[in-house]
Image (tube, rainbow, N blue to C red; front, side, top):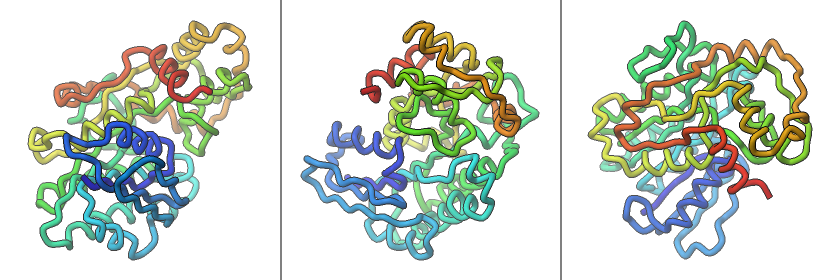
Length: 321
């Protein structure tokens, strides 16, 4: 099995690489080769006997997609993206990275005779926007209200169409907001959801830019890796022609996040959260859906946490040193 991870140097990409190496296989097939791609050179894994190629390149670089298809990977994970806040701030960069490079990859695959790899594309709940029902199902129409959500929605439609035509065997999984993310905050509008847990657990102050009543949809990095592995091995004929679906997760308010932090780390951790309202962040976040009906993903075997305590505990076990 030859696996390619585009976006391998990112948090989820790194954790996915570690999981594949730990398992030593994917879908019962031994892992024999890895191609790791990102704008900075991904670290070649130690202790892996198979072939490893690391590629440092901007995924929007003309001609890169054709170069990547030369590897003939059996499974391609497409994780690389410009996050929501950055895509909103830089229109051209967002479309070049999140949409144009994705279309270029799909077309490069299409033009290789007899090559139909499994393509796992990470989409986002940002493909939905107000007005929204209390629970969003996979049949709800796509109404993105940000450039990032629009880019992801278009890519979903392309993937379903290219799969229907037999050019590739694709699945788009709409990830919940992934928390608790290790490391430093990024430019995503949702970054504070991790920060208000991560920073206090590390003895640092955190900024909360929205009201505690804000509700959102969450899963852990551990769950996200599980989604990707399952998507790579699932019999996709069970999905029909619609190859995009929302992943299971947990609907919780900021107040419920903070309460879980208090139960696990005590009131001294909660006291490290500073409320600093940011109307720009609040407007973006309030336009996102906050609860989902994931019966379709559940029936296909995707699983996530059922409490925010579990999400925090996963961070403590996997990332808190």
